[in-house]
Structures are given as structure tokens and as C-alpha cells.
Image 1: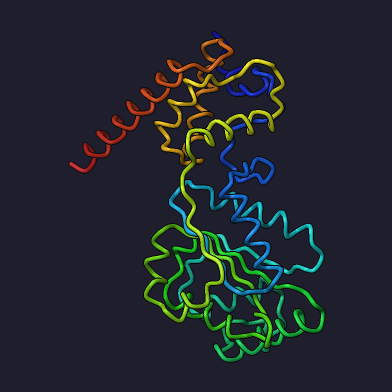
Image 2 (image 1 turned 90 degrees about the vertical axis):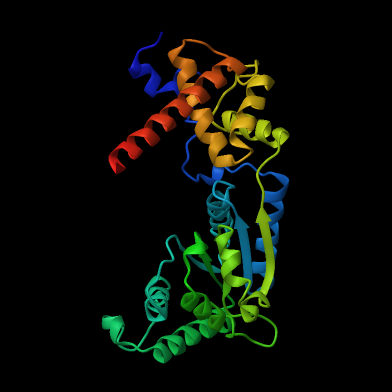
Length: 298
């Protein structure tokens, strides 16, 4: 059995150049399933045509954040894009949201040294002038991407709707991409004047077993695994799929733990039993943690 020091760097012990199952949303490790590829292509088309509002729904762990990073990666290749991404859109009111746009897009605004003193109409006016200058005079595309969009309150959603009113006869002056959990749908479904403005919407679903295998193989190949033999046997992939239900984040997390266990056992192949052992440990740990929490509550 290898020492803990070796286990920490399991990816190098197994012949990887990089960690294959990091949970960081690295665009290079974005696996293009048919649905993710289709969503990314549609988002880029919507932005190119300046259609206005696109919304991507998805349960926790379906790959929304990784998709957003891939979108940023693509936008960064283009010289005509001005874009910003909001990671935590929990604003207290419309003024706070508009002030954040002024700061992050470097918009000239009256009283810019003390944004708190600007009223809503001044902020909207300054933002609209910025949009007109960049979009019409400089032929740029302004894009705002909002991750975790289910955190948006109704006031901020209404503020976004108002921004979509800034338009020419042919296109919107700002492009919005919202990515949020399914509870976002429950918020906007009752806002008919918001739903009517959605040009593209899609709900991400978990992977099937074939895509689960492809995701695992893509990541280990991307991380530099070059041995001819399969690292994960089909029987192991089947167990991983049954446990994860096809949710990419859960697949990645369990594969990370499986590879650590593989190194600790000084083995080179992931089979069904190894995966089952790791899953059993996970369930035991979760049960112990639950019992500990219950004991603290009592």
C-alpha cells in the first residue's frame, strides 16, 4: 500500500499529467454531450444575432457552471464582445444591481465617485447611453451572464426585463444569459412579460450511462492518461452511473474518491468492487454525519 504522501498526488502515480476529476469548472475539461454542445451552439448563435434573453435551467450538478465557463472561453476569443459574469446575483434592490453594472462595465455615470447617491433613472440613463455607444457606434456586443440565477429576486428580474427594453429596430442592446436551478422557472413562469422575452430556453438533464462512460474517458484522456488498458471497467462505470444518476458533478466527485482508493490499494484498474467499496464508505460517512447532527440538535 502506498503512503498518504503518494495518495495525495494520485494522478501522477497513475500516469496522469493533471488531476482528471477536479470539481473546478475548467473549460478544457468541459465534456461536450449532445445536449451541452447544442446549448452552447445555440447560445453563441443567440448572442451573434443579438436576440436578447437566453435561459438555461438545470438541477444541481448538471453542468451549468461549467457550461458558463465554456461560454466565457468562447466569448474571450472574439474581439467584438464586451461581457461580464455575475456569480452571486443576490442583490438587495434594483439600485444595487444597476450600480454593479456601472462598476463592472466601467460605465461613466454622474456622481460615479459615490454610486450610492445615484438614483434609478440616472443609472438607467447612463447604462443606456453606454449600450448605445458600444453597440451602435463601436459595433460591439454587450453580454451579461448570470450564474446561480435562481437567487435573483423579483425586483432584479424586473430590472433585467427593463434592460431588454433598450433596443433598436433590429436587435437588443444587451444580451442576457441566465443559468439557474429549476426554482428559477418557478419565479419567471408567472412573469409573462419576462417569459415572452426569452428567445432561447433549455433544461439540462443528467447524462445516460453511455455519456457517463464518455465523460470519464474524456477527462482521464484530457489529464494525460496514455496507457492502452481501460482504467475504468464497464462494470465500474455502471456502478458509478447507478450511484450518481448521471449528474456530472456527482460522477466527478465519486471518480476522484475512487482513484484515491485505487492508489491506496496499490492497484491499477477500477472494477465494480472498488467502486462499491467507495460508495459504501460514502454512505457510512453520511450516516455518521447525520447521526452527529441529530445528536447535536437533541
